[in-house]
Length: 283
Image (cartoon, rainbow, N blue to C red; front, side):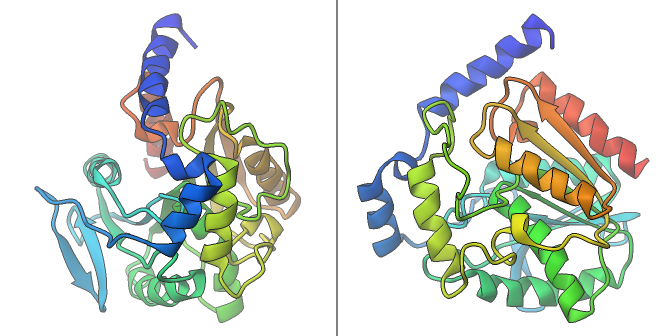
């Protein structure tokens, strides 16, 4: 990695550190968040939400485009889709000749994982019919798509064409300590463990439907995963990649050395390199 490229990433990392959600490292603040959730507000501006089969969604690109992408946004299952996600989905639609659908899915603590499964299953059934569908997601959304593909096998629906995730949250139980929360500029173990319990609700946090690390991956589509070495999910993601390999999945793991959580979504040179990896799959 060149010095210039790494320098820009370090500037971004510095900014992120000062904007880290306060509930990530505070038991008191995460408890307050879960007891007194604020009403989710969608971004306002040039991007407008619509409705597909009763589900609020943001759509990008031509509905008759060559490719289709169902994008699940991150946010620890408690934070709403934001401009960063919307801009990235817009980029995907323009650069990959894709119709991109980003659902506004139910979030914790007002909703739970299985409520979101119901919503996304209906949306998926409609999108899979058009063919050439990719499931993509970042962080919590990345973990969800891996679990969802395991779940598809149990309900008899076909797999997508491919799976792409950025820093997926593959173990909401956070069962492999120690986690280096101090050096992660976005995430923290304290907040994630409590949010994970809320998201799982009646499910055990080791259930594959919330933690794909513990699920069966046999028969899953070709998979591309990105992660930064400086994020607390990194070692769990490596374990999940090993599981995919052991289960016979064709998986490619791109590691951002010295980089942070969901780095491909940020305006840094390393993100452009990541996008080239994605584009090669679609070309």
